[in-house]
Image (cartoon, rainbow over all chains, first blue to last red; front, side):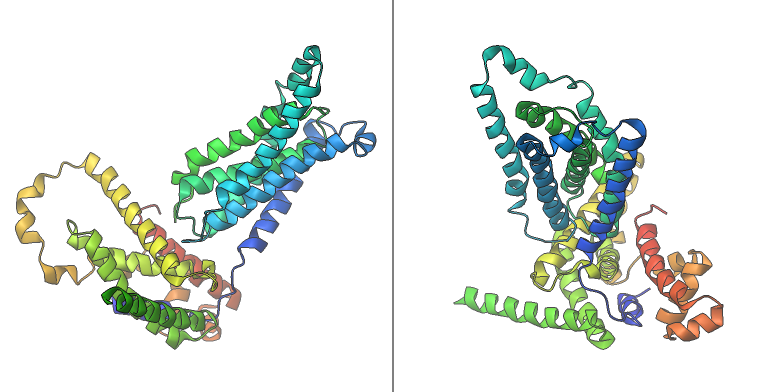
Length: 213
Length: 190
């Protein structure tokens, strides 16, 4: 087929195209993914019994605020990386700002604490399971986000896979805080972050293979 | 002085092509066709400079990039410079080609090196080696027929629906998925 014939073919009946629907598509993907993660919490784990009281504590909201802002930052990254040639100068800032924030709070908490309490603040009771559970909960979101991203046009597949993993990890971490009893900022600053980095690492590894178009 | 005129020329082309694409996205197929035609000339020059050692690949890659531009045109945001969007797609397709070739050459010893001189002529480069018609013919009917009727014969969606007995939405989905399947076939995935 000659190039001009291809062009004629592509232009014939091409019609109008809805303008960037990426944000809506990701909203749907995140909705389904978060619903899946919530279902997993209800089936495999359970909602923490003192959730009603926890909702009144500032530390609960610091925890949720950290993972939610990480989710917002990685959603920004995902949206930019799904569009060819989009400006990505602010992506590193959007991703590191929430982390620096929680690290500052964690450092303050460790400095303020009695030396003997510090290891409890860091390890809590559930450090062994927390990152893995977040990674497991991230699976439905990850699948939905990758599927959406594949329908768009990521030109940096590795970075895009990383951002998709980080987004699904941080959304999963928001859901996980319904179950998680930990309230120490140092715990959240390390183990939650580690949990979100597991799918992010997987995304960076899979990116080249999965996100080709 | 020369730099200023070069920049002015770039700006004028950017504005012109962007206007054509934006009109095309709004449903003006004639403007869209002009956009693709002018874009293909820019793509050919862009890729020729980067494929000096692979002149036979240029036209194939022009076609592949045009197909990608078409399939992904919904990702263009009119607030964004068009040149950045198009170049990112062209670069991506170029890298993809190099990656495919690297995998291929690991499996096949390039024994034909000594035949190089007579196999690479300039007139050959003007023709694509890959025949999209053949790839198109390999698609399953529910993808092939919508493309055949609406895009090659120029029938309307409604007429195509009547001929094929498929629903109008199935025709639209078929065209969309069919062109994506065509792009996948080019990359040797499907």
